[in-house]
Length: 484
Image (cartoon, rainbow, N blue to C red; front, side, top):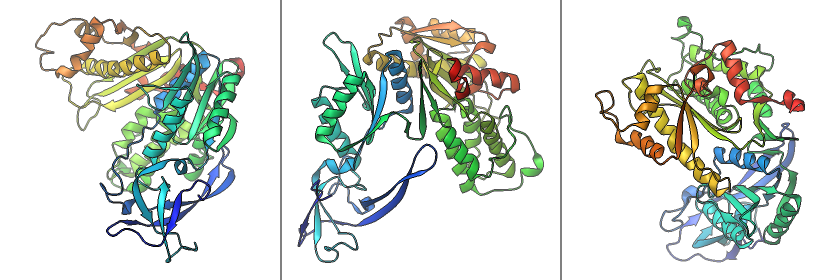
């Protein structure tokens, strides 16, 4: 902190100034095997003692979306880029402050109860620290020749004079992934090292709980270590695996309440997994999350079934290859929620055969027919596709339109025609946005049979054979990498 000039020690603070408290934080850093590799201590400010308008104003800092991580990996695989990882040491302490802030020195320091600290840098714990660090890093990356993307402010690109993509940066707070040729990567690390003290991790290995496995055709993203820890935490290491996650009804268990905190904690763990690398469980987890208030023992047993399913599929992950084709698959389950009678929207967007974005959620309004439910899902997917096109085109992919596959001809007809009839005149205007996209040729609609629709597993439970087919269509086992 002294080396980075984080604070100045002063005798008194100005009259009326707010004095922020501080504390020490001690924690462990683990690798992908769960082994402790570092013991860390950090002095942090108690940000909750700050006053809005006096001690801070802007606090927003962009965070890398999970979709963007997968798109970043896919583009890197297509260009045959290597991906290396660096970590900026004490990142926030490199960023200056716009406000005058004063903090109590920590207990044990020579200034404790004697002097005060005037902060010069964005110490951890301050409400504006993330925003200040992001601004500082953004300014420097632009200075060394990178361009920030409008569609994803945590992705940066560098191109040559002809517009050819040379390198991509993905920023996740203080972790930076650099994709490019070895020469570009070394040059970028050299330039960043001139401004910040960094730790060079080498080839990307493990970031935000995701394991990167490199093979000759690309990368595979997997969270087997995370699943193993989850199983161990719930004494499920030796459980018997199952092939699907269809819930089992047991009325004798419905009257037995369980701890909400324990249930919600497990749901949160499973959502973390489903959003990152396991789209095959997103429907079951989202359904289980609806029981977070006053869950019973039957609900708990059905969530445990998800763990048993994961036990048998622990080695599966998302495989990235060099296929650049972008497709989307849409489905809906009409009035599937028995309590609200709302339908479920499910869609999947792939680059090649790789799932890069998926969704499974209840619709905001009640649909009055299967066609309306499917049409609503189509509209939701199309909005996401437009963001996809914008981002991919910024990454120099030159995508003119995206093909969406859906198993409902009535929804396709409604999207391609402007007719108003008694069955569609009540629909919200915003869902008709798809018509404009079809007319502008940004979206192409194609019919697909239900048994071939990859979005089918995002709207309903599947039996053993269908679940196997669904999982193997979108995920790859690490055990199969030798055949790739």
